[in-house]
Image (cartoon, rainbow, N blue to C red; front, side, top):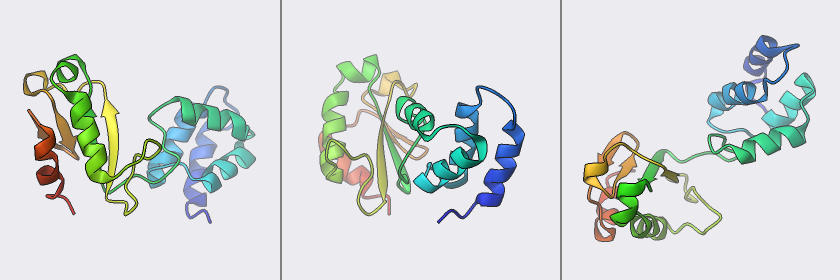
Length: 153
């Protein structure tokens, strides 16, 4: 069931009759609930004439779109050059293991965390770096992951 039809209608009215608006339209719709539900995409398709296949192509190509709800806490693991050479892959694996995420999942079953890989957090001197929400942790090793994540309920 779609809860924000009136708000989506307002967004749709801004783009009515315009071409090439799929990305900004979907960005605004996603901002309402933090992700693009099937119901929201179906509704946008019916009202705008943008085919579901086009929307799905856009949302699966661009990493800024989410098709599932995200967790209460967002964990960003930097895989930029400095972090990469300082052990970012081992850090990413440790976080993924701590959260018990499979290769196909990015959000924990309880909705507590979502794990995201980023190109750079701008903290190269602290590599490897992870960020939880707006909190930055530097020189993180696998043995520090549980202690960091346990701070977040």
